[in-house]
Image (cartoon, rainbow, N blue to C red; front, top):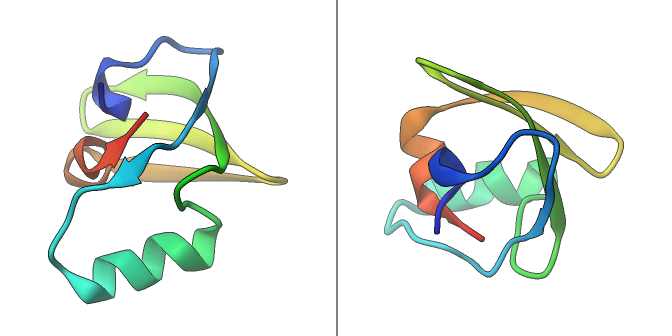
Length: 70
C-alpha cells in the first residue's frame, strides 16, 4: 500500500521507496523518509498529502506519495 491509500492520523512504517530517480531518492532521504522510518499522514488532499516525519511536516504531491510504500 502507498501513502495515497493511507488513513489520516494513522502512523505507518515505510517499507520501501519505489523510484528509479536518484534525485528523488536523495530528496526523500534528506526529509528523513527511508525504509524503517515512521510516517503519519496528517491530511489527504486532491493534489497530495501532508505527512509528519520525525519532527517535521511536509506537503508532498501524489507522485511522491505513490512512491512511498508502507
